[in-house]
Amino acid sequence: MIELIEKADISASLKNIASKILSNTRITSGEALELYHEGDLGFLGTLADHVRKQKNGDMVYYNRNIHIEPTNICVYNCSFCSYSHHSSGTSWEYTFDDMLEKIRGVDDPITEVHIVGAVHPARDIRYYGELIARVRAEKPDVHIKAFTAIEIEYMTKRAGMSIREGLQFLKDKGLDSIPGGGAEIFDEEIREKICGKKSTAKAWLEIHETAHMLGIPSNATILYGHIEKIEHRIDHLEKLRQLQNRTGGFNAFIPLKYRNKNNEMSWIEEATIIEDMRNFAITRIYLDNFPHIKAYWPMLGKQMAAMALSFGVDDLDGTINDSTKIYSMAGADDKSPSMSVDEIRELCRRSGRIAVERDSLYNIIS
View: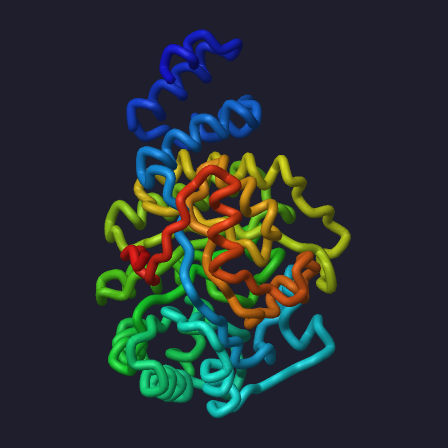
């Protein structure tokens, strides 16, 4: 591989960066910016694929999961959001029985229940603690991944708890891990423009760090393709890389593409497929201490998620079972997202990869 890079028709600077990546030497933020701006897509894909293979071989992970979205009634009104009652023109507030019935209604065995939704003004941590307890009673062996940092900050404050007290309370009720949503973009100026009333970047990072210290692992995300610049993306990745250095508590990173239907930012054109793949590649290269990079197929579409497997991705999320509306309401192609295990395995096979069923902590099931 190093010999191929040496023979490539690229600048000496890019060759030097590539040599660092191939020798497992961490690149700097400046070098990541140079890759973004100067590296062509095939070059980036080759490097990212090398990193992916070093970490995970030819395995592509998936799980059997469903989502529960308790409500879309939200105290916040973010410019990019198509999901909340502010933008959608519809609203719902599921009861405990409604949500438990969704779990009972899944025919296939599941290993994960993923619970995220809007920040409801009248529901505090005790309500959501009861929800977790009821899900745990219904499915004692299932992994419960629940509540973004944005939800956790609001529900704990409303209950008069500290973040640490709130996370411990949820853990005692049966919470196993927290998802990565709500990170959006960490640059405060850009964040103020797209979701200014929501939690700060500092709060998001502190909540995840506290969770890790309490033995609660998590994922991380970025929302890209809106008004941010490449420099803002790299800054976002750098903050995550530093936190992972301290805690090691992140399982996976999920780049989330801004979709422009039915929200206040609909005038912005969506990122191209080429930009999506470039973003996956840089993410895999830069986040050298993250074990997994996920292509969330309900956001990208199945075929684009399959393409991402050549740009550093080793995880496709799960079966979903038509249980999430967040991206379908924002214009994603799949309006009823669901993928069978056989479909996932065939998608991986056609990509020349080995489909591996995992649990939520990436322990191999089959």
